[in-house]
Image 1 (tube, rainbow, N blue to C red):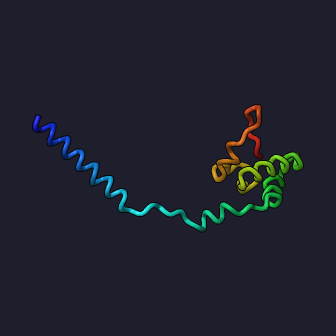
Image 2: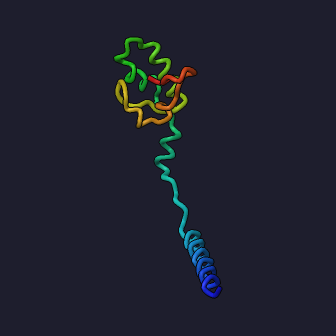
Image 3: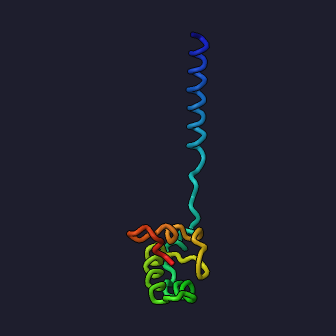
Length: 102
């Protein structure tokens, strides 16, 4: 019984110290450069022109890319692939479950 009281007391003291230590550290401040870049809209027409320049159906490609760019504010570099750079662009699908963004 004495061991359980000692264990309980040491556990409570440890939790108190841990809680105090967490509150004494300042919160992480987000980088203002990153947040200001995220607020700026990219030039979707220019980005989609580059993305769709090798497409067999450039008008369709630019229309789909433009929609994705407006929603995600991001277009992966190159004419295909590189979806990991822009997760929103990668994850957008049509009603049929196919990739919406070229």
